Image (cartoon, rainbow, N blue to C red):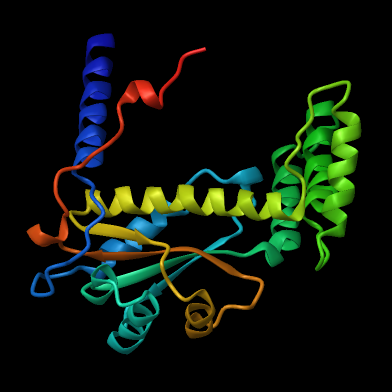
Length: 250
């Protein structure tokens, strides 16, 4: 039984290793190759399972499929070949303005999961979504609430460990972290489907948001192009710094 389990785990590890080694940021796609748009839908379904901060899921994934919109968005991506030759573009967007409904969703889920329980665990979980999350995510235009939270965090942190990243800017970074985790899931899932991707940060965010019909308070983390790679679309062998320069044991 253990041998069978170990063999299965080794096979899964080998599959994942193959995916990661074969994934590249592709700058030019084969526009003559067949492309299954359903593969993007399947990959995005897996993407929604990505880890994210406090399960708030303050993200959206906008697919740009039509030729007209795709080429317009490609021009907003500074005309990069990775965008111009793609079969589909997917914008990864953070939605901070949806925090109230997400907090309510999570609180309701907690109530259902702990139905009939009045122990400390259930009380802490509800307090987290009904008290702490509103305290952290409620931000004014100028970030003054965040400055107050910073001061409180500094004061309490003098005598005990305390989360320090509580400003409006810190929350923004947190949301983009979650969106980036989702983007990596998507790119890996697309590679498993036999397709290639390229994450792009070089784009006109104002025009891109207008094209996608996004509100001003939404932010695009990145735009990911999808397609079948051309050999010339991979710019040489992969290069990474030495492991010992970035991996440390404590």
